[in-house]
Structure formats: C-alpha cells, structure tokens
Image (cartoon, one colour):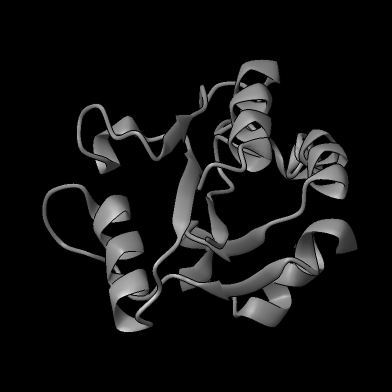
Length: 142
C-alpha cells in the first residue's frame, strides 16, 4: 500500500517563531531521512493558501520537492480542520493509502490520532519525530 506524508511547514520545518532567515532551517534533517526512505508528499501547510505548488516546491530542496505530488484543498471549517482536509483530499481522489501527518497542531486532529506525528512548534521536527517517521517508512506490514 502506498505511503503518503502530509507535510506542514510552520512548527515542523522551522519554528513557529522563526525569522525569515531561519525559515526551513530543519529541512536538512528531513532530507537525510527521505533520501534513504522516500515517500509521496502532499503539502497540508497553510502556505498552500498563499503559494501555488510550483512556488512551494521552490522553497524546498529537490530531494523533497521531487516527492511532492500535490496540496490538500480548501480549508475545513469546524472540528479538526487539518485532519478533515487530509481525509477530504483522500476521499476526493479515491486514494486508499497508509498516511501520516507531520504537524505541530494537535488541536487540528482528533485526540489520539495515530496518523499524527506531532512536532513541538517551538523547535520543529526533532530526532523523536524523525525516528517515528523512519519507523513508519520502513515498516513493510502495510
């Protein structure tokens, strides 16, 4: 079964308080992991509301941008917005896949959401989340 990573930017690839010169400062660690364990990436970040997919890919190194195949759709108003945007993306495209969301906003997902790999927005992705992501990417039981 295909594996899809839904990727947020703010609070994941950089701190939510990062100045513009520190944007995407955590990207190298994700690149290192994805070089050895690639997967399909869909952008779930709110950056998709301000930049088209071509512009978004230019913010990222080719090792990540080459894996990006889309962005989630319009905003979901109501409970668990990011989770529902992801579910709507998959339903609209009739995708049956094993997925994870790399995100810093637990409020946008149901409590105990197994698909969420939660980052600390103050620092972004760290070793713990990278290990969770690696475990998922290398688990061949799906």
